[in-house]
Image (cartoon, rainbow, N blue to C red; front, side, top):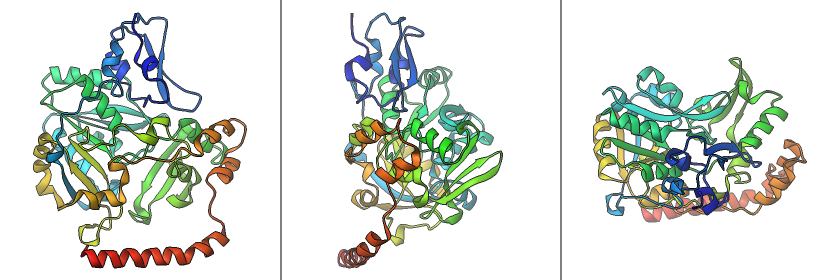
Length: 391
């Protein structure tokens, strides 16, 4: 009798990647449900035969990464198609990569909205690409997507699979194939569904299943983007991202999934063939004000795919440390869990606004005045350093 993957690693290390579900040989032995904290994680049922085979799909137990650090290349990029950049969260590079596969009878896996939550799905037609575009700052329900990848590969299909670093690591433990190319994102961590739903219910006074969210509305700018909530095609709330209190709690690391605070998959080399993200802090000479993507090529397969889109994008090679400066989650970035435990103890007992004021409040006017000279000095110092370094 062997332990299941979740019994071996425990819920504090479980990312909710669905690797165990996609390797379990017994139908119904593992089911994914929301935990009390609001994350989809595996629960072993009475159907389990205790074979332990689910451990083979757990990236926390069995890490598979064949990429080499010496293959790493870093670029600042954006699509030459202004419409693609406009409807994308950053520079539209995912769309350009996806088009290569969709125009060649291939399959693209990615995340889309469904009934107020995020699910992974596959598409084979360009008209369905819109659903996979844009950042979605919630956990995606992978379900049996890795099994579907296997089935498509058996049919001779070429596949592009996009996910978070832990999801790509899970896929790597299950499948290695020349026709499978993987893309991960620079991931800050996944926030709790329960907190998100509480916010929608108490603050927006709505049902999360009826809400359509654009977490990256660039009408106010790429760097100063807004978050827009719609119900029945009508905007019910729109804020600059710094003013949205749910998003503020997410960025303050208050209610992320436990393993996200010290992610085991923010490594160099990365687990995916290509990594995509917003190039925050991008130097002016590498920047498109309408959206700039940071792209790391992590394998020879990733470089081969990048060659196929070069005529469709603007790209400028840069150094890894320049990219890492404004995007620390590219590599080995630890987040503070200082407030998390207390927050989740308070969560069932307090309303969202009270939690916001206690754990992630807006700075007071007094503190803004006190900190203003410090921010000015910091800005001057950074400018001097850039001039000295010639950046």
